[in-house]
Image (cartoon, rainbow, N blue to C red; front, top):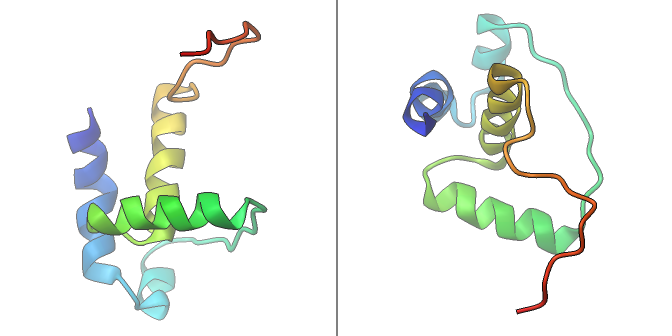
Length: 84
C-alpha cells in the first residue's frame, strides 16, 4: 500500500526536490499554509528526510493517502486511551 504511494509521489519528489518552477510547470500546484507546533514539524521533517523525502513531499504523500482511501489513515476515537 505504501509502496504504491511511494511510486506515485516519492520517486517523483526525489527527482524534483528543490526545483519548484519545474514542479509548477508539470502540474497544478497550490501553496497552503498550516499551523503546527515547531517541535512536531521538526520531528516530522527528520522522519521524512530519513525516508528520502522533504517536508512538502511527506505532507503530499499523507494527503494523497487520505484521498485514495477516503479516510484518515489512523483511528479517531472519543474514548480515553489507557495510560501505559
